[in-house]
Image 1 (cartoon, rainbow, N blue to C red):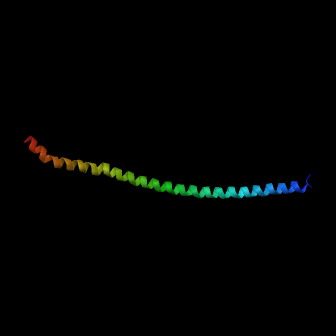
Image 2: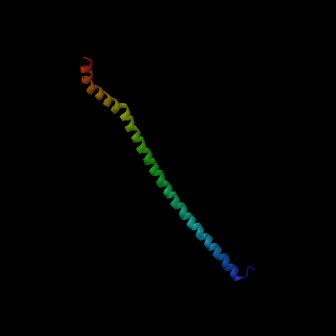
Length: 85
């Protein structure tokens, strides 16, 4: 049975195809790894941007909104002082 040249050629073809498949799988895994690293970098940048945005919102809530309210009160003060005088 091992002397059959067709069988030996077929087994060699199967072996060669399996080797090619393994090479392709390794290339795909390397590509996947590079894409995963890129995604992680993008996520890190997005988290940094979100952190800065959170600080900006905190600034707006703690400083800008009270200042706007104070300005409104100061602008309306003359109106209310005449109204109740």
